[in-house]
Length: 106
Image (cartoon, rainbow, N blue to C red; front, side, top):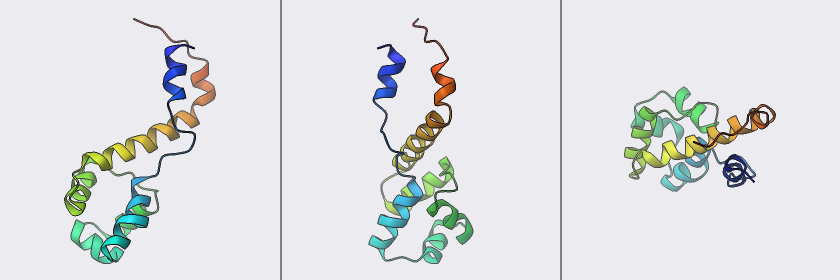
């Protein structure tokens, strides 16, 4: 097994949860907040927040800063969740092509 195979073996078998789904299913219900109120607190439009909650809009570094302040847990966790989700999606989309690229160790 080469280094790339080892790295790929460490990847989850299912797509990591989009941070918007976590926000929708866990955070907002725990806070008993509506999307309208959360969007107002975050200083973003309801449409923007709805797209994040639906998992169709990426959590940017700017949004991660907002979410980190809103939730009190800092921006890094929101960026890590987004990165894990995006990386998994890219690996799945490029799987066949990536298998054709040789690995070179320096």
